Structures are given as C-alpha cells and as structure tokens.
Length: 259
Image (cartoon, rainbow, N blue to C red):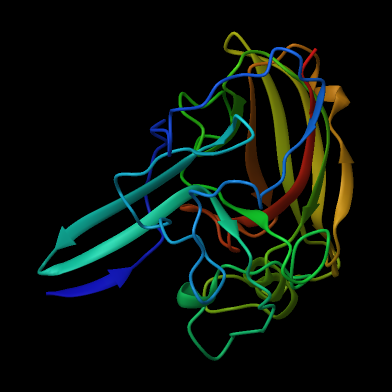
C-alpha cells in the first residue's frame, strides 16, 4: 500500500497533546514560547513529528491550545494524509520549491525562522479553504484558546510561509502570479460565548507587496475576556472551490493578558 500526503477536507477536533497540566492562578501577561513543550519533537526538517498523527489533536504551549487535525483516507489502495490547524516548526528552510515537492517541504517561514531568527521555533497555520467565511464556523480549523479560562489578547507576530510567499510572488500550477490589483488577507477574530467580539485583518499580500518579514499585529481590537481566537483567509485569487493560493501563515510571540 502506498502512502501519499495531501491537503484537502478536514475539521477541528480538540484532543489534547497532553492533559496533566495545571493553571497558574498568579499568572499575568503570557508570551507563548514554542520552544517550551518537551512533548513536541521535531524531525530533521524542523517539522513537528506528530503533524500527520491522527490520534493527536490540539497542541499546547503554556496552557494555550492551538487547534490541529490530521486525517488518513484510504482511497483505491492509497492512503492520503492531510492536516489542518497549527503545526509547530523549527524549519529554517525558505527555499523556493517551485520545480520540486512543496508538500514535503511546506514547513518553513519565508524569514527562515521564528521572530528570534534561524532555529527559533514558531507555529505554522494551515487553514481549511472549504471553511465558510460568510458566517461563524462551528469548529474553526485554525483556533487558539486558553485552558484556564478567558483571556485578553494583546499582540502577535505574523509572516508568510515560504510556500505561500513564493506561490503568490511567482504563481504556481494552482494559483496565479499576483499583480498590482491582487491581495491576500489573514482575518483574525475574537470570540466570547459563540459571538464575535472583534476583528483584525493582516495583509499577507497587497498587490506585488508580499509580506516577507515578521510583522507585529495589535490584537487589542479583538476585545477582552474572550475564550477563542480564530483565523480565516481571503484572496483575490479565488474560484468555485475557494482560495487558490496556499492557505498558510506563520505566528510567533503571541502575547495575552490573563487577568
């Protein structure tokens, strides 16, 4: 039986990577470090070992849970693996694989590392392009929550993945090369008790100006005492099956207020 890795059709399930943790009642502001979970093991490419593990759901750092789903579908004697949500990464690879295999090399940020530079861990987001963007999704593919209750979002750093950047810059078999009138936006929403509390939009591409550095994003407009942040994407290059350019983005140094 052959095994292939594909990126189609998924939904979020909230299974914890580990559950034997407790909450710090005296905690104040928290800056999430993606280097501090000993349960997260990285492979030779800097990718999280469990990205395609269907038994593992949300991955946690400092009691902050990042959604993750992996699926394995047997079709015609082949097993197709897919994932959505978030994948921790230490990849320093920002090579353009336009003539090679992007699926096997999808783990890098365009900066070649986290906000602290090469070798600094960050987290890669992969949004499900079939998710409804006209309403509130029942189970967002890319979401962040805090185990110990509600929180106040403060800021986060955002950049493009290498795959997303080069696909927009140069075009690919699946999407067009971005021109002056094109755009791609990462939408960040705050949620409290099932209702949206605020929204922040980040331009991953504005015409041919495509984000290629870590950009600090103020999350205060998402509101206070929220219970979830979730992410969606829209693009000028969209067809009947949804957004055509790769649905990837990278995050680092998420800061939240726990008071």
